[in-house]
Length: 138
Image 1: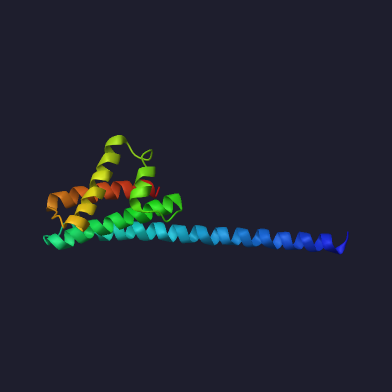
Image 2 (image 1 turned 180 degrees about the vertical axis):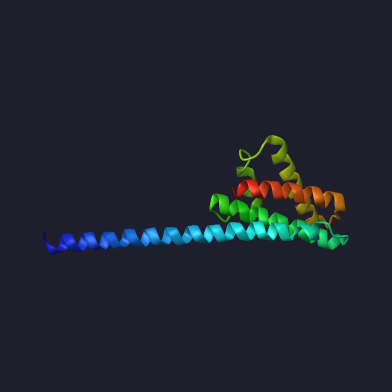
């Protein structure tokens, strides 16, 4: 064999090894991100059940941010929650998908119209977010 052929084979082997190592590292990073989202989801439940209106509002905003991160994880993109939500219509049953849109709209009303959220509304919203985020991260 000649030297250029051997050099080419060695270089291509090194490139393949680098690609393989970067994929393994990326996979670990995605797994950590997924477990962080699920941990943060569980930590928000006491805030959802708070008697403080502002704490509940903040928790719903944070839940929507987690939903956006879950979609970014699933679709491996950095698009907005609303954009990915439109894309996700096949992931859920029609009624669940509508409820998810409803809680996303609730979040928008909290942010843009300073809407108050009752304890019952916040518990229902948490249930929908939790159900959907877990399904997205499966």
